[in-house]
Image (spheres, helix red, strand yellow):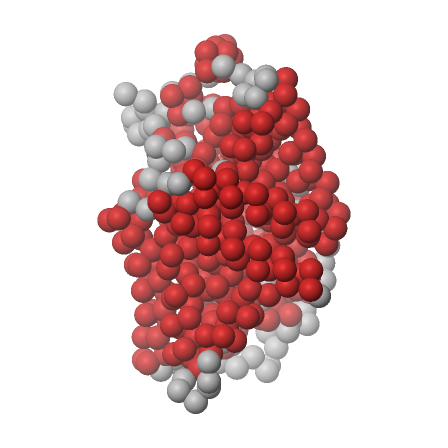
Length: 457
């Protein structure tokens, strides 16, 4: 429709203006991009799902009401809106990368190898494969392997593989710069760098998958029906295919991290600069010399998908306005006094925050809302811990809350794939693994703090 076409081009223009504004630190461009986003949301609001309409609007209204009470309503709106722009840049960059990922022959060959794994090792290999693909390709990696679940006739097998997919995919949010969780935490804790939480986050991601594999092996797997006779033993991938897959994933991650760590750019800006040209080059290599103008076809596909980002933009915008508005009600001294009155050691406070985030996710509240509010109100200084300690707790609990949330994008996607209700997947299938992983995180936080790791000096 013409309106959708206009919205798509408007979103693209907002992305370009926001990217230039963030790269050059020009406030006027940020405000211009914000105005474009507002117009985009007005045009696309009626097309957003009703739940996202209610959540995004309610959060924005509550944030503005808090700002009005403190006399800073306009400032709250502007600050919250501008803080949404990095997420717009991230969403757009990931959209570019998803398109060639679904057309890559090497990734499709890897997909077939993973899909045809025998019953004994399907769970862990599927979890590790989606973790690797998702860490660089985000949702494109998940969509590549979800057909493995769709083809299963046995309900228990379908459940096991769905859990493996979700567990491997969401655990990557504990460390991958291509996930919105990392970006939210880095924005919530400005003094934190990606490299500070990448290694502990990756280690905890392996811990989540270990918890899931142990639960599946000792509790669930024995109940599965006998493996079907038509499962094909996987053939060994050719060396050229392995090289191509590694080249895709490693080169993309290396380029992003090199610019983040060496040039000092933020992750959203880096992805915004690298994502589109990388996708165009990748698409050209896939298309070959015989297909004319592959860049035009890719650009058309990507831009036409932008109106579909209306829900994410609305919810993240509302969450940012709500977080900024809520923080305007409290002074640093009042918050510090309230925290001190609890008389809890910092590691216990952080563990309590982890439980709040996970419980909120289980109740359907998106982790972006809780994490942004915590970042605005509870600083590392108030909690008495280092930014790295708090950052690790936030990225770890983000991944766990996504697993147990019936409203997360990953759970809703798997609900469509499996035909099961989202609350069944979140509360029945994933809940035992989340309990085990939460206990693991609590133990890590308490023990590491006892050994002096994370203490504010």
